[in-house]
Length: 76
Image 1 (cartoon, one colour):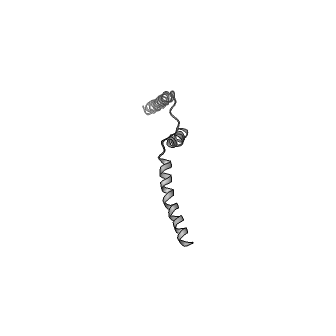
Image 2 (cartoon, rainbow, N blue to C red):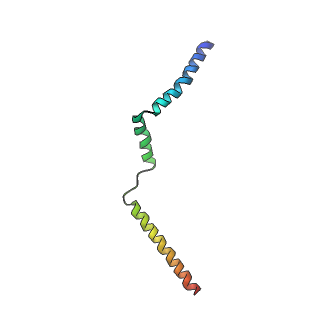
Image 3 (cartoon, helix red, strand yellow):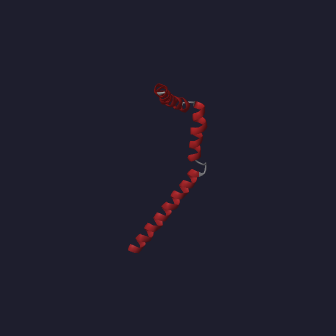
């Protein structure tokens, strides 16, 4: 019983890493699961997103300028 158990354990110890390596290196599996999951977590940018960012930057810049002008007028 002891030798058979050891042979079984050694088979499992050797088969598991080899099987995981083989599965992980399948191009179809990688494309189907990993790339798809990445796109779900981090979707590609929208076309109008850069414009929204520029608009936001412009609003912040204007607010900062107005604040500086008010501070300069009050100190004068």
